[in-house]
Image (cartoon, rainbow, N blue to C red):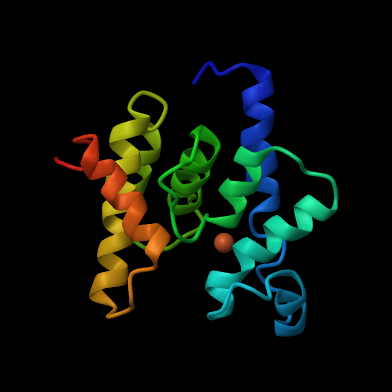
Length: 152
Ligand SMILES: [Fe+2]
């Protein structure tokens, strides 16, 4: 995408850090994310961000990217947006492989459009599963709608 090295390094830090505590036991998630209730799938981002901060990560954009990578965040800069897309588009996931590969190929050229399609798919999955929509996720979607970005 031709981003400067300094920005690329922020993206890479977020990608390396975001699932640091994904497989951690419940006691560790409680230690690092005591104020973030919910199942491990929703706690490992806040826990990983807290741990990264304790270990010296100071970049607010990187920390917000890690903390909210399962939710989305209206205030994200490009680090959070890229991590949110990369996490969904990584080829190791088994669902909708062709469609996701197409999105991954488009991402460098149309990051905003791909972000909207990723967000739409992730939100539809939450809704179709009958799960409650987390407040940051609703605000994230509304921020895309507000800019006219969520329309097809
Ligand atoms: Fe994760």
